[in-house]
Image 1: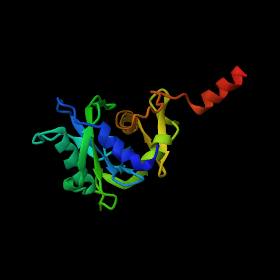
Image 2: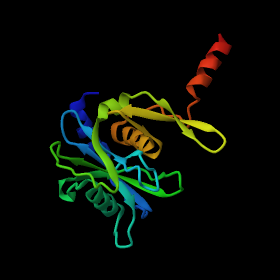
Image 3: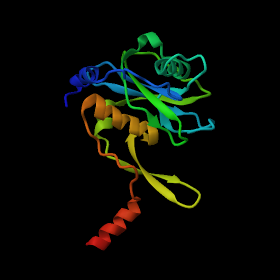
Image 4: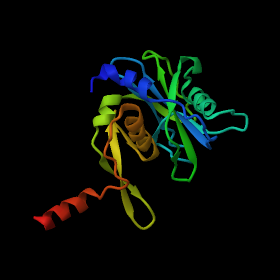
Length: 205
């Protein structure tokens, strides 16, 4: 797919749901409006109590005074990255996603100028970076190990800009590709560990 047509396709295919339930949290998927569009991503501070050090979209929980999911996404993006809400051209939303803690999160999609000036809020964000939309679409799912008390599970992840994108953020990107770009990216819920796959291959030979 020609990079020049990606933002046009997003604008053609995405819409806001006519009846939207207030979500418990919302994120902003901000995409630069240029020939090689890039997605705005952040790495959360290692000092946060939830999802510390993980790559995510700007976003967060609904406040009592927030009147819509869009307001939540824009407010949180401003608080975390200093993204001016008036710099965001809203184009639609994506289906609700459930986080690991059970919280329902609404992704809101918008276009932003490529030269936008951003500043990381140091208590929440360690890094702001941009990843090429086409490179995310083409990134193969790589096993990412998550250790639990009695076992390790391997979730699919994308490796971009020296960061690991997995979990809710990766699932939202896959949803963006599907609904916004008519691109079905293979994304299993779990991946077997590399060692398991190697052993299985040897047994099958």
